[in-house]
Image (tube, rainbow, N blue to C red; front, side, top):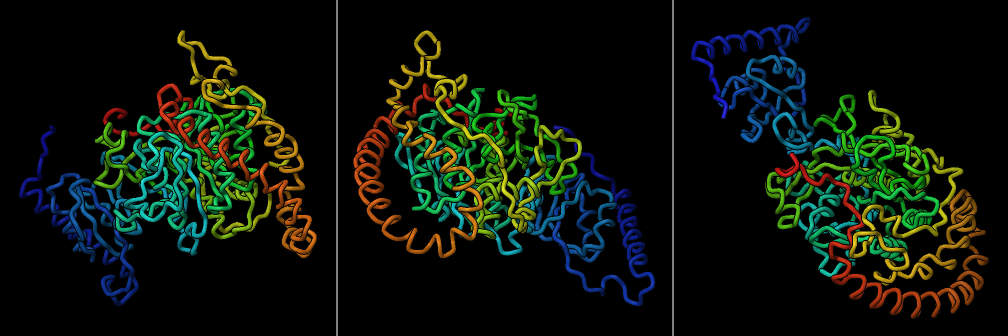
Length: 589
């Protein structure tokens, strides 16, 4: 341990006199041309955290008092203290000998004073993406439900009462986040800041979560289980009011989005009216490192920046792990935008796999720190919830356009790495622009290889070679014809008629839908809600009966032993990786 040299009594006396002189100068300067001294002028104090050069030095505290402020509490963990002080005296306090750093915070909670310089983590993302300013306008994500397909979410602490519904596709069947990733992601989206006195909230603290768990304690899962989860989200989107879906995961596949089954599935989800936000990937900043399905042109793909524990984006730099476009095969510009993702703090899952493996990453008893585009994606999903909480009627293309068009350009970061720029939740939420993104995008048609979609995590034979699609499908019990056949995935369902301009464009979301023509007898009468639309053909045995929600789709094959049993939670099914680094604990730092 390095020795700490304390000032001598003579040095302390000289320092004290210097502080007094500085205070006098500040008073004289501030009172120039006035009859009243600064101390008599009304001014709302700001709350700050002062870090000291030497933890035992009393001079900084004395200076706060001399400048008309008040020391509130000692904070040994950062070698400093919290205080309140008139805002016009901050510059003077910064010059006081012994003061190493001053951080101004809207409240004296962990969100404001955590800094890399003191060996701590960053929790300034709410201010960096201007979410806190959005709350001040009355928009916190209220009324919006965000689904996350992840490792589960523990509905305790900051997330108590926030999980509207939980679905478990694993053998654990307990809806507990035994791995630790999903709870962290959920905290960044909708955490209430309970353990920090409201100081460290998610981007949309008013939103609720729908947890879809596809991985257990070992963190492994497979593409097929992800597809089943996507199907569940689309099927139950209306039942649980799902407007946004976060996918903090990906594969390293380079199969074209035009044929890839996973891209096809996320486009179906998007066209169903759900804003899909995906992590860009953690394969580094070389071109072509965007993960799948972040390579899909429809979805919102989020990369990561290092905010350097400052809410001012002027010092932001690209996080070294953040995936960069263009996409490897199709040459598309990705990511769409960037958000903080380096050393961020969020909700801890005590006793989980990651928590047990990285005790140095814990922050107090309730929080944890980690890095990865997983977390930038979560913040962007929270921002989408903020946008929708103000303008509920927006479709996914309109939400995407507002988020991208209002992002702030970052100097010194290449366009291929930052996309439209840094996420600005406030500007996007307050926008009234009705423009739709994704105009002219060629839709995915599916039909590609499920094994190729898994990338290097393909299902392998005993000799280590990737199985053929047919053998892999037999092993998993997956029927591609049943899942991707013409009835589910053909032109009628995801082609021009369903997802094109007529169905997802102006005619569907414009005045014609809410006017008399759409809500009148023609649409709500016998033809639309009668026997043809809601009768035996649409809601009868073929759609809601044994074939669709019976034994094959919702019974033993989908949620029973084959889908949630030991075969799906074992290491051999790990074709999906969680896009965190994972955690900046002792193993990673």
